[in-house]
Structure formats: C-alpha cells, structure tokens
Amino acid sequence: ANLESVENLRTNLGEQGYALDRIPYVIQYNKRDLPNAATVEELRRLLNPRNIPDFEATATTGVGVFDTLKAVAKLVLQELRKGAEAGGASPGGMPTRRGPIS
Image (spheres, rainbow, N blue to C red):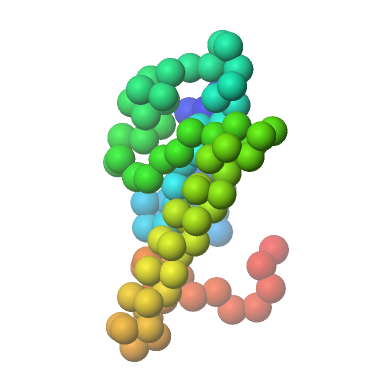
C-alpha cells in the first residue's frame, strides 16, 4: 500500500506539472508504536532508494512529527534561496504556476 501511495503521488504531481524527484520532500514512517509495523530498514529499502531524509514518528504522541516538519521546512527554504540566487528562477526546477491551482 505504501509503494502504491508513492506511485500515486508521482502520478498526481506529474499531472500538475511537477516531478517528485525535483521538489523538496522527506519521508515520515508513522505508527512506529504498532506491534505489526514493518521495520524501518525494510521501509527504507522499499520507499527511500534515493536516501532522502526520513524520520520515524508516532503521531498520537507527537514523537518525530516536529523533526519531520522542521526538516521539510529547511529543504523548502534552501530551494527558495537557490531560486533567489539564480535571479528568481523557479526553485528546484518546479514550473512557475500562474492563477488558481485546481
């Protein structure tokens, strides 16, 4: 189900003119408190072949949630700085969008 979710994300982003591999993102492995949770090693092998930042979390207790948010915010800010330094070019190669997003 997780692999299918990542592929759906790729497809949905592609339909909007974005590529997952060109935008900042992190992975959060949630529900780490459940006894039947897959190992982080297995999840990394299957879901994170590019070795992007990833975090273990338990949303019900908040463990790992802020760390995940902080990491993705940092990546987004880095991309915005790159765009500003490149003379306003769109960060991360993302297309510039005009008008409302549907």
